[in-house]
Length: 428
Image (tube, rainbow, N blue to C red; front, side, top):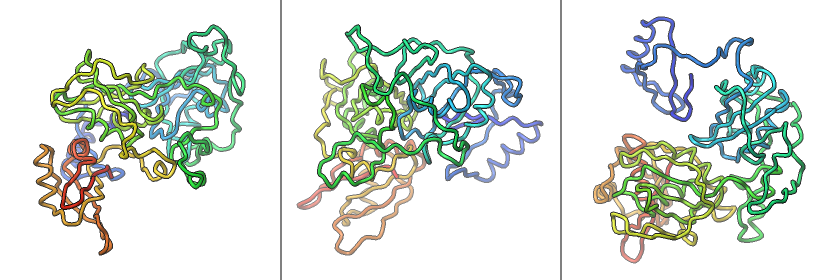
């Protein structure tokens, strides 16, 4: 049984001897899966159980649980309806974002056919991979029709404008048309890559560039999006985390507008990002990671903007509120910048750049020591032209937690040398 958001899995053997052999062999010789070392140990569970027997076509549930892995593009009810409806008449869809992005889809019949057809498929090429299981509920309860939930048996549950009693006019009708059945499976993306984008164009030349994270061509995003561009982060170390360090970590997944620590909830901050898709990427890659021995919880905030109220002093003496809207360190401010960013989860290797060539390995190790963060175990400098004024390369750490802590503290750190300074660090 896969547990994708924990990056774990349970494997049940027929005999205890087989499990013993697996654990023993894994301890003797390291096993790598997709470049990551896998660790094997005994589970407290005696057997793997599910609410239903997924292998028995006569058994199951008409409600499916969809886990969307690597969601680089927005996942809405329109998108899932387009994907799931060709298999059978979709009755209801509910999307939730507690641990990554998951959804429940209800059919009028047992969902074995849809599960077999869609499990393991990519919604868009190379991303938004579907992992499907039977859900525990047998019926979904939908209160309103919007980007995160929809009851296709009750089209009158339309979303209303806040503070207004009139029904909002939909641009493309009550729901999207069915998607043509032209190829499902793990080797074929279910939808073409989106082509719209919401990034600002700084010059006419930017119009020809390719953007990495555009909007899908669906009706819901033509109007107001129900999800928020504000993330709530809890589990922050009270003495070691501040607004700047939150920016250093979250700026890898989208522009940061404002950061504010909540006085009423210690160890919790609100992060206003450039758009709701940046929040989705942050949740996918940063939720449940450890930073300074504290496990972060990242979720969508009910707030739609960060307001600088109740500003106070943090334990390190810095302000509890900071505005980053005008900083040059934001990496998604234009089409050209956005297209160069490679979104990936935390790893044990960091890519550094813009470092003066006179800096030595010992000086970089000393920099880590001075800022009370773990030192690197391997160091590599990329070949550069003799006339180059900066160098770049890789740091490798004992584990990804150490790498995250170094990035959180030293990302954008200025190394002062005569007549110049530099900024370093991004995740490889």
